[in-house]
Image (cartoon, rainbow over all chains, first blue to last red; front, side, top):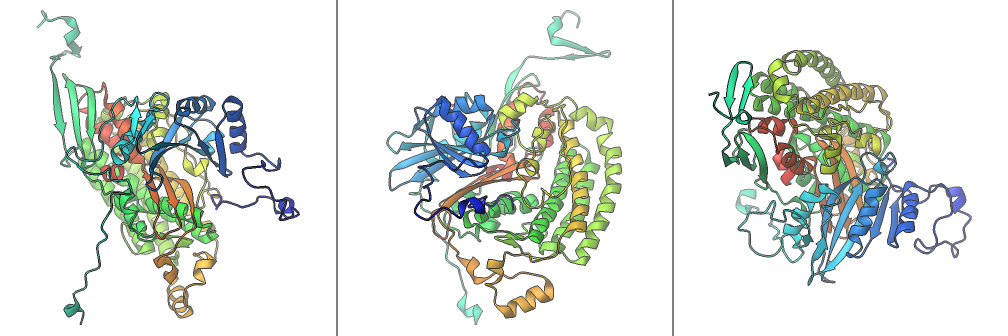
Length: 196
Length: 406
């Protein structure tokens, strides 16, 4: 139950705020009531580099970076104590002709950061789907980057072994996890004579 | 014999072994004996492994792609399929992500039942893994014992959920069936049985000199390497890292249960096996606690329970303590949003990332299983070890190919 996102942790403080004055999420930081781990982390991060951050939940955060900043931000996160990558996720947005790479990073050893997961997101266009590999910073991206490469066609520059992983060598066609790769839905077969 | 240079002759208690430096490649698999449904391309020098190339994907089910055309309820059996012996945990992580997007509160009793099912499943899965490890090491009795003891726990799962494997027990907002006195009694009997068996397991397996020789100092993973390579679960804890999702980010009823995280610092195959045995014992304790402490109450969130027609509530819930699906489950549309959840599955940390675009199917489902994360660990661990240890390392990691391929 502790995982459920709670809209407001302190109803007594939030209720008296009139509707019109309610701060929008991005514009004003929340009143200084118990800064969470994520707040402290973002504060620490902003001191070192200017990036867009978003708090999704008390223990979840998002950092949106340009791909030129990706390695630098990853290095800072590693120095802060984020020691491994949980997933490397590709996303396809066909309407905008864009691909997104999301690294979900967390920590095994840091007592506080092991409680949070931070998403490091960067976007590339269809025409130039190249992202610098984070293998030199976190070796645990090895599998995820290889899979994202074969499924989305995103090239990770600097990955030591960027080959197909799950797909057979003779697989042809569109990258399977892109949205233009359509799956056919099977209908339900009913033998009407038998049914009667 | 004495004319050979000393580097290539190893003297071992009166027996001289010649190492002939021959380089070559050995193809292991993809048929089952000793490899799983995976081809391992081993580059050897003599009998020392220089590198392994993992050819995974033989049991790839395209879970992430298929989820694009399945409704949220249809995905439950889909995500269970990769690890049918650990299906409760596979199911739980996914449902937690869906609940997070929908903002559903799960009743207390259902949380305890989730932990109950997950711990029963953990015992069954660890016994399965031990059985496989035993047969890899040529210990056929351990194989039979592992699968025999597992049967007891699978029977409990069957009594609770109605299915031996692929239980589909956990649904958004709660669970499907309630714990009955018969199941409680069965479980208490099984706990007593398993405790007795653990002593026998120690005698025949853990303290067996053959097994110790095959596992001790084999596939040693230092703490730094375990973190660097992103190992998960018992493999991580066998290398001295105190990380368990059940403690780091408690879910279900784990914040109310008392248990110890099993950590061994040696990092070899034996330490990983000891972690699994320790976890079985912790799970037995937890099951006892759950049976004692489980609160009375509903097993499905009120907002879904109210949607079930009264006549069906009377028949199924009042009569048999079961929940039938409300029609809403057939094609519900969660609001736009995304969620990332982690649970401690039997083999380690399981991560789900679900993105909803407001339609009846997820926009993206990312499923990272513990065995998936063992792919790189296995590749690195094999380097420099001897060829006969390949299966020992493989078994001690409890690598499960369908789970890794998804």
